[in-house]
Image 1 (spheres, rainbow, N blue to C red):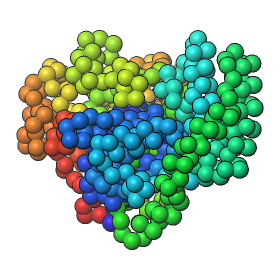
Image 2 (tube, helix red, strand yellow):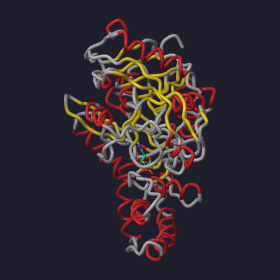
Image 3 (cartoon, rainbow, N blue to C red):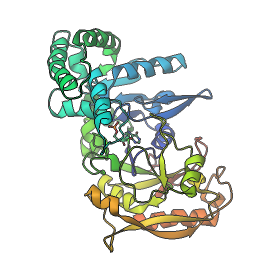
Image 4 (tube, helix red, strand yellow):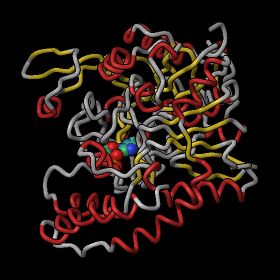
Amino acid sequence: MANIVIAGTQWGDEGKGKIVDLLAEQADMVVRFQGGNNAGHTLVINGKKYICHLIPSGIVQGKVCMIGNGLVVDPAVLLEEIDTLTDAGIPMGPDRLRISEKAHLIMPYHKRIDHARESRKKAGKIGTTGRGIGPAYEDKASRQGIRFAELLDDALFPEKVKRAVEEKNFFLQHFFSEDPVDPDAIIREYRNYARRLAPFVTNVSEELDTAIRAGKQVLFEGAQGTHLDIDHGTYPYVTSSSTVAGNACCGAGVGPGAITGVLGIAKAYTTRVGRGPFPSELSDAVGDCIQEKGAEFGATTGRRRRCGWLDTVLLKNAARLNGLTGLVVTKLDVLGGLESLKICTAYEWEGKRITEFPANVKVLEQCKPVYETLPGWSRDISGAKSMKDLPDAAVGYLKRIEALTALPIHIVSVGPERRQTIVLKNPFQGA
Ligand code: IMP
């Protein structure tokens, strides 16, 4: 039996949604373990596209989907997704969707503070998604957060909201010069959410334990990417949760022994949305071409993603931090038509060559990429079904990634559809 973690190796948007969708077929459960509605992936149901931010794509295949304790959940967004999917004909009962009683709530004041903080900053803006993610995790760490267990407690919930609002309103009014929030309105609004969401709330850790003991297969779906991790990413230009594979355990409530494999998802090039250093960024026509051909717009905010060459310093860092057992390369088709391709293999900083990812963001900002150039290919590869269908240059590009990262490539994606995938090794088979 296999229990696999899917982790992003870059700065998010690596195409994890498609791979989760593909592998969910063989899983019994799909679990999100961190982040919130800052993530986004597209679901196609009867030819129609839907963007989901919280509910894993396994829901469409009738899998049990779980929202682990490591998430911060905006209940309004979750209910909207439940309603949208129900309208699209997807059964959405509590037998399908489970929410950890320990997951934290995103409250209206979290979103207000997220916006206020970003608009107040002149320099050093993070470029957050504005969904209240950071402030919600701050409250979790400072022990002022409100969890689903408390949302369902009629006596405790108003008490906790009132206590929190006292401090938040002082902060909003006297630091940001913003209007206060109304605690009674929040309590009324969230009581409605509580009524609707109560049947879904459960002990996710216990349910996962029972399922894993019974031989069920679980897919742990990471959001964002390794370099947006609060500890290991390009701090402070990161999200506020731990995005690496190790957090699948903590954020879902399982022990490390349950995990049998970790697949790292890497786009065939690199993108980043929001601020922060990006050594292999392209600010030229090639970058524009990749951006356009790859339709690189954020699924959550619609922002144009910054594009650049593949960076194997990032990938090696991700391999170590996540304990990757295999790599998935996505969007290889997007690179078709470029005469030559570059791979960043090291950085140059103050005349020295470095191959370790620097912790100091100022150093990273000054790093110049060291490139290796490989031949491109002109043929459209979006119909490739196996490695044999790929031009030599595309195979050479993949082989070089394997050599530089010391990781085997298990899956190659050559288009958005499920059939546009070359599976070299299925993580759920032979486990
Ligand atoms: P936050 O998570 O909204 O606080 O945003 C912090 C940083 O993470 C910003 O640069 C966002 O653009 C980035 N970010 C958050 N979620 C995602 C994601 O799912 N994909 C890519 N970038 C993300």
